[in-house]
Image 1 (tube, rainbow, N blue to C red):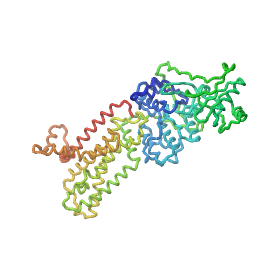
Image 2: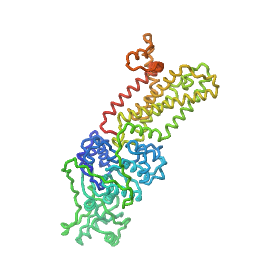
Image 3: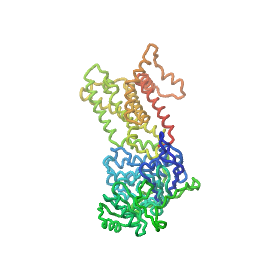
Image 4: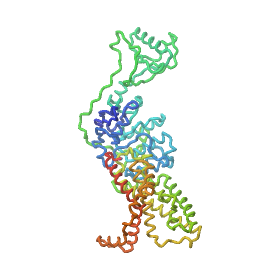
Length: 611
């Protein structure tokens, strides 16, 4: 059972709240429609239930709020708008990444693609999918964890009748197996046709809370739709004949030359128009929505029969539930994998609950990195640029060999490998904000220390591999072009390797943390460029001077302070790392990464919603 109690959004400026004291229930085993016009607060209400929108009130999913649920993906499946994935990712890659985020087996992705009818499009890019295919993929993503409750925001908007029928058949099958389904819509006829229970809101407040039968009886009335250039004259004629025959007929003038006649039929309206020579452009039977809107009644039916005339039924106000907000959990039976009588199969149930593990965010980050062609394109561009620059720099014998192998001319603030590592780090968070995949899956992946450590580890390994690949390829290319004797291996290669690795990892982390703090890829790239352009000159003024002391003997002094004894070969690596940090660029990287880490932790830990 889903219980929303007292949901009230935070108002903006002088405007009223989009959701104002909204209380309703969505029962298990039924499909509930949240009905309201555009701007009535339906989407805001769903986001408040998922703790993605600030405000007051609480939502219980089988007696527990979302932030108290250990495995949210097993309890709530969400579809808010279109599929928020990177357009270069495949359907299978998108679902495998979400499987890693939710802690479910990767094989679940293929099973869900079969369920929603996308098995033949598993390698199709998200940017090439049609609206119907996107909606199918979004529904597959919401069902990955075999959730008990489904929250869908306008799932049928823009779909064809065939896709619409398939969608609601699947939702009906989910509800028939004990699940709870809540979806939003602005079509009253669709709500009456597809839902078991209809909750109507207007202006963010509850208007009616009814079952589908009562809703159809009180809100949907048969009428005759008439379009004529003589709307006022025909309205007067229909009202006059109704009074003469002592029948209750209500004529409502809508926009343009359109009339809606309640209490009559097409034959009577057509005969009246024919007898009086009124031109008709449209005459059709409809089922109208009698939602409280400003309408103008041109001809009420007075007379002796007025007391017994069927007037529009007022919408009953729904009172908040009086029972305790902590009902016992509703046991949901396992869904069988066979097709439901409505025509749509349910996904196979998960037998074992996912276990929280530090590898879960690491799996997600690896799927995110390898699921798009951007890292491969970036690495290829870095390699080509490095080889070209190294070949030109090696022509001059005055260029130091480390600068040649790193392809770092004096005109560039950073070598191509460091810039590429910084770009990959910036895309690690930047792509998630440009093409979010977890915004609606509250709590599926730890958005704090777990995900941060996974991203730092993956970007560090990526930066090290890129740096190693660039050095090896540059050395091989130079030996091929100029010969092996002209390009010898430097004797102090351990110190050079330590500095090269620290520079690449530092740039990657600076781009990652800046993109995470400012939620933009360009912010990460700007932070990487600011290290040599802005921070390093300031650090150089502080470090270079007559009072600077040498760090010689640091490993020996550390050995005296520590209880553990490390090999003497490690002294060279430790001294090399210390010299790298003592350089202006190294100091600038340490300062930038430290400041950005503190900023990320400060901004991330303050958020209540675990998205």
